Image 1: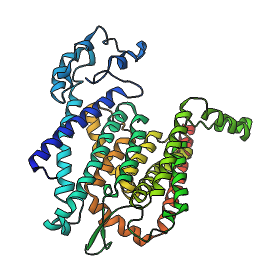
Image 2 (image 1 turned 90 degrees about the horizontal axis):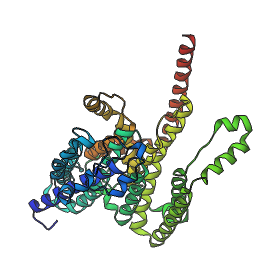
Image 3 (image 1 turned 180 degrees about the horizontal axis):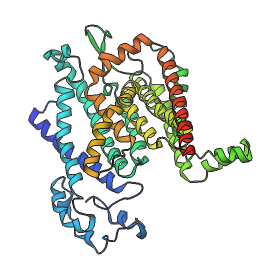
Length: 441
């Protein structure tokens, strides 16, 4: 912050270029179904690891050996790689180039909006130069957390657009990052204006106890630690290979279905990785809990955001899948929303989820113009809803959501449960109507 503004913008532009390059590398290299060696950062071993039957016929010869360090320069490198159009397809370089340019422009713009212009603050606070100067360090911290989140969401969005799935290589490390930065500083969480619904007199971080901000209570005691361990344990379990078979349960009994489910959990070696991750996380939770204070406050806020963000999508996935008798939403959407919640808290993740459908029309139109495909997975909606929540935070949270939370109080939980139940009933009825119409035909 002590650097001249021009130099700061230049450094952030360079950071944006390399963040875009990182997102491009993940998009092309770590996709589940069709990894493509178009990234100049791709190693030979990654290309050779693609089974020969899955390689396009154009992947022949030693074209990849001709690459050098100049090809790795963001933006410029893609102009140089146009020479490989016969291998990867005409125009393969356009999207990655645009991603890097957008990130190079977007990160400095986001920094100016959040840290310098007070875009997250109420208009009265943003118009006060003295208050803005005081808020600048906090806004800078928020910006760097959001820069990480945006980079992760860019990679997740374009893989989801390409493959209708979101790889764990993005969401699991991304969730860890959200938990870590939340532990380091509660300043990563966007501001709550106090008093809620009145003229602004003070600003506080939107931690898990916003907008009530009561005394620490049980959440800083052993009960809070048990809740944190429960959230962490459920998340690790959710990542396991879970294969519940309703057919086995109906035909061979519940006991056989449970044994089938249990055997599936340990069939693949991934359970060892998840168990190790759970153990490391448990030790970190215990360490931060013993430290207490602000680190525990921030970590617990990220954990609650993880639980609410991932939990609401998981609940909708389960209920909608049951009601429609088909998979309604991929589990990648659950892990994506859990990652988002770890960065922006439960309040932001709820707002992002409800704003996601409003971004759908815009995304579908752009996707259809480019690809003529009107089917867009839900992940891009969630990412767009998150970005909209960040950019319109004061209007979304301070101007509307926080006041309604205060007004509804404990009723908010029961209203949410009722809405989930109503959604399940409506989808079930619609499934029966469709079945009878098709059967009659």
